[in-house]
Length: 396
Image 1: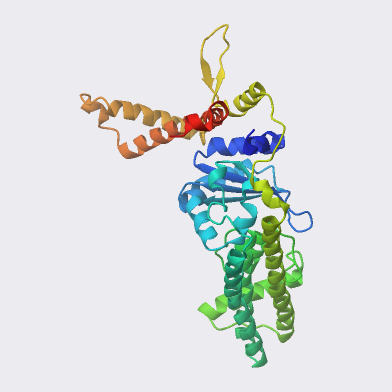
Image 2 (image 1 turned 60 degrees about the vertical axis):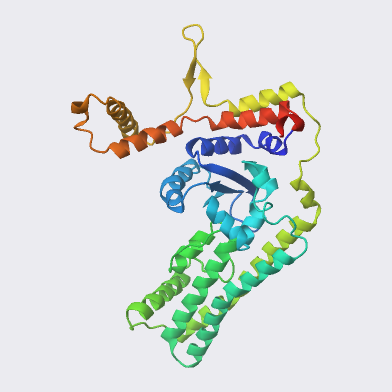
């Protein structure tokens, strides 16, 4: 049996339900990757990486809120949604996050033949790609290290407000480096507290990070943010030297932890690439199940779009699911459908006079129709073709 189908079959029922919901409400999903978090390092049980063939704005404004709604009752799951184009660019730039967590053995939905990152970098054992990744990391971290030097210089010169600004920049750039290889994307924000909360979805607080439950450390965070805004918009900022002493120790510790965390991620890549894990990229040899059982399992997983009507009273099927955001959205779609039908009646010009948003009506109807496309059944047909036809019959 296909290894992807085998993995899906053995997923926890809760995971299977979430995956099914994701595919239902977002027809643009290309791939879904799932792996477990590290018990001592990560703050979650499962890490989801969803790759969608859609513009970034659509993902942030349209799809992300929907998927976040699906995970409201699963706070121990870490969720990331990426556009297909963004993921490819990040892979080309050597982003460790995608190398380590979007691997073929983590794929639970999509075509494994185009799985990240193996379609671009088949051989990671020669060290060439790893060297590029290391060079890029040090190039990005260099900014934080430069601000750390600036911090120490201005502190020694007695320019405490400028030193605080340098500390802020050192922390901000450091968080952005961490977010890149631990979360897959960078939070665009200047508030250190926001960066830390974003990162704490992924890893437990480190020594160099701030304790958001501690009043004194929250006061330091507020001072850092004021130092940033003051340097840009005003020049009336004050900070005590002993507060800078604490910030110096935290910044030094923070930058050391960034190096350590990167090294751990790099070692994970090396381990997965050179150890026996590499063989897991190929379909594992398992006992072949009965062909009829396989077909039944595939049917159960993928025939989801329609359910039979009560054959005693009515023939045919009921449509099992169509995603509608609200009652208003449903009524709006029905009205748009009628408007499009009216527009198709060329001779009934008087009936079209009150139809103001023709393009929007057509778009609404097309989007609704797109949701009716049975993607699951398409997956079933692909699986069945592979099961029932030989390579000789399917190639030209």
